[in-house]
Image (cartoon, rainbow, N blue to C red; front, side, top):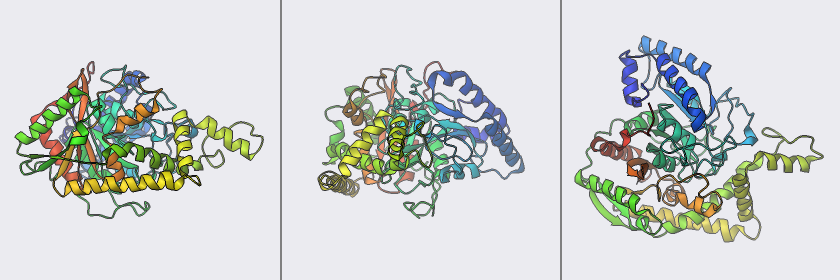
Length: 484
């Protein structure tokens, strides 16, 4: 059963080939057997999952079930879940049990999905390798010596290892698309404001966006139909008409103009990865798309701009974790200042501390204009580059990452090298645009991803193009070696 896609599982449930209880137990057994090595889950909830599966079976029998009813998924541990521990991959929230559900969690609960548990992640979503989690690194199912990508590494590894049918995730600078590339999955980040951020623990508020990781574009469309909603509890939520992303999947590619940025094929990109990406673009041309070379002249400034803006916002967002109201509190503080200092020093890991310090510095008197304001000006130029490009093309394509998954420890001692992992994905977040990654081949027996970027609210177009590619290729069907 676990080899089936969400679309196939939904059909099997309706045709009574198996029950949700049987399906859920199958995934729970696989988690117990395999995840001790992978470490993709922080919390597993077998009793609650089986109870939800029983309720789903009843709804299916009564004919009142929606498309996702009875499908087992798991949530990235950044989404608040009522009555279940929500840690954000940090010691700071090691014992935090949320009193409410994030809007996205509530959406899936109302759809009748079964939640298997909460997934591992880089601490407070800060990282590109899932090596910064307080609960230990997550291993890539394709090669246990390698990282799965981050910060949604637990989500990607769990789906790639067939421990869950799909997973929620978040993307601040590439944290859905990059692990999708490293684990051979379909991962989509919608337009900023399209998915609710209420109950999603904030890293950088103007950049964070929820999305999904699945094996196929059709599965992603199903999960996106539930993920997306207008939320009056989120001041950044966009009140735009809702779409059925499944309806446009079959639209032919012919007539689509695809832009290929010349800046995405320069120094730093693996020759082998570039070849696989080019082969994928050639496949689109065979399907009738028009390929046009474009320029995004300020793309080289995306990483430095991001690593001023994101840390600045993180330093403000994480100031609430002070050992007073909730979160980790040090033992026997001498006074209030000691409480603050030691609680934060003990509760946060090195990468989180590094970004808080950078962000606080950038926002400080005398440096605000030189750094933060300047970065926001660069952000506007990056957005203008995309606007000009989309006046000529329908979508943009290029590599998701510079290389396949790298080995543990390869970049841990060099923060700048780690930050450059997101060189092709960060600009999309700065511009608030939707982005998607799909597998387009193997290099050194590890997956590589093709990135698709669209104008605002073009999620349906991206999913359509991804689905059409998956109709003529089999890369999305490949699974990591050794999986039964």
